[in-house]
Image 1 (cartoon, rainbow, N blue to C red):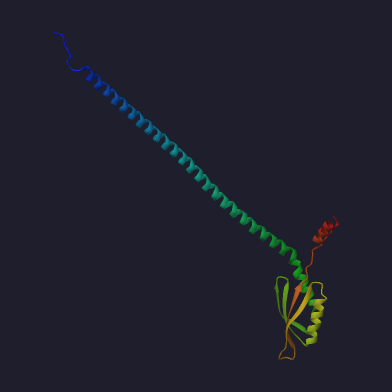
Image 2 (cartoon, rainbow, N blue to C red):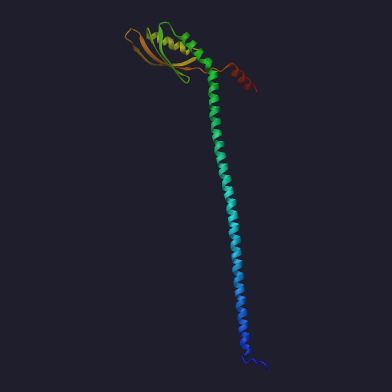
Amino acid sequence: MPRINLLPWREAERKRKRQEFFLSVGAAIATAALVVLLGRWQMSATIEHQNSRNQIISDEIAVLDKQIQEILGLEKQKERLLARMEIIETLQRSRPEIVHVFDEVVRVLPEGVYLTYLKQSGTRFEIRGVAQSSTRVSAFMRNIDGSEWLADPSLQIVQRSGGGGSEFTLFANQRAKVPPEEAAQGQTVAAK
């Protein structure tokens, strides 16, 4: 016997189209969700890659900062060594000067004056002693003023001592002497 469909065909067609529509919408939602998930995964991978590159750069910056600190430390050490070398050179150049100064002190010391204390601070000398009279102290100061190695005597204290003499304290400056080789260089520069 032949089968006759008594159901309305339009209702079945609508039902089929509705199913297709929902399947299409479901497929579109699934595709959109997949695209969003893939985009999110791609973005997180890109961010992670950039963060790893930033970390490498930060590590390199830290290494360079440490090297810069070492270089600055070496520069400071170099400056200290150069300053020490300069001081040693100055001391080497001025070493014979103190011999001349002591020799000059002996030459300018008049008879009747005895030194008890001699101290050098830079180029300034503090001289203490005992003189038979204050005129001998003034003669000592005149001799210092006319000296080749000493200059600018200034009397600080003169007082009578118990033994009939005068105790005195005076200050004098060392004259700056230029070594002959530096003087020759200075004249050569001045001539140019």
